[in-house]
Image (tube, rainbow, N blue to C red; front, side):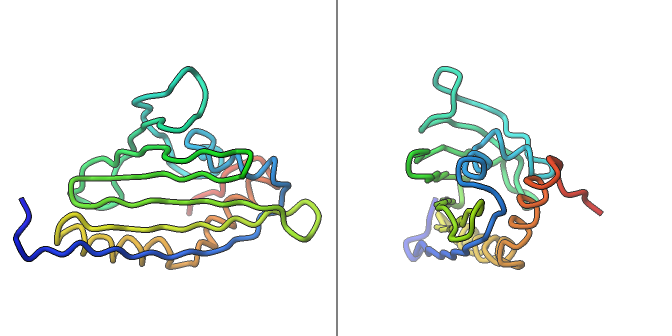
Length: 163
């Protein structure tokens, strides 16, 4: 239950990364299942999948990133492969956030640019505080870790090895 003085806060940040592959190869890597190819430890638990293909309103869960947080529930809120756009809505009882990925062909041959935006909204005071930590952690390397992991996968077909 919220206090009468609670004010939800929304914070957001975006970064653009350059990926060394054509759009038709890169965009699918941002799908909820294909992220397994380049993200260490990514193993979503599928809750709802319409038919047997990735589509809007697919629902899945992942373990939390912060101690004492419940598992994250994800909804594939926008999926437009024809526009190279994907958006996820993720939530817990204390916070909600979206991750939007918009890809476009790069100016150099066989490159793709991906604009990644995280927008966090607190649903409680604790959620407001956790979102600050989450945004800072996510953009600590300006998503160069994503760029490195995806480019490594595109070059080798393997995930970056963790130290």
